[in-house]
Length: 79
Length: 133
Image (cartoon, rainbow over all chains, first blue to last red; front, side, top):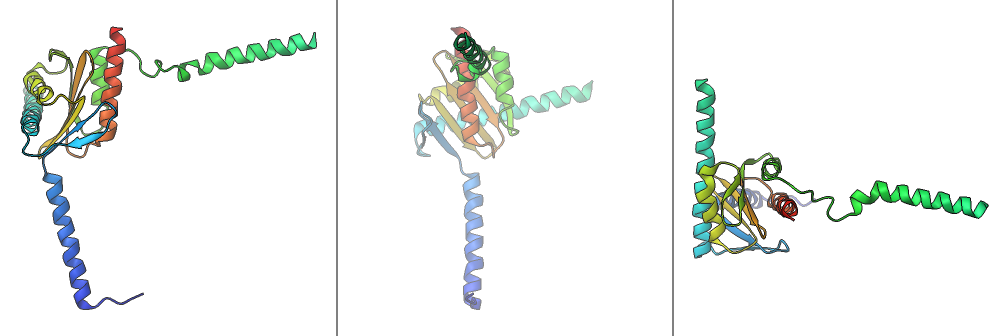
């Protein structure tokens, strides 16, 4: 097995760090994908009108579900 | 006589085989007709990340699920004409799909796998359509 030089070790560590930062950034990314009747997906451009409208509605749905859950929990606590 | 007895046994075993396996080979058997409440229950059980599900008419009237979410669900369905959509945000992911007469929306935490959820959505919509026919 080839021994790594200190410089190679350092650059591998920096590469790993960059990859994990990239994964974390991708995990936070907002994406809208549409699917045709056969199930093939296509990612919409983030600036498109369709994507913006879908994301806005999705955020309202997610917030709405969180509010309903809180309401439900509060109802449970007051009984 | 022996030939007749052999043939009878074959006919009888074939009939048993068809009776037992018929439900698995009929295309409609796996897509049983669903009520909107059943459909919602199935959608909620699609993945552990699923938090809520709604079943609507194509025009957006809620058939099962919290009515408070209806306006946002309608807006999501209106946002695109595609048969199915997945919107991933920082707070979670929303899947929506529509069929000829129905639509369904699933709200989930991040991490829900799109493939199984969208497959389940399509199956549930097929079940709702089957109930109308």
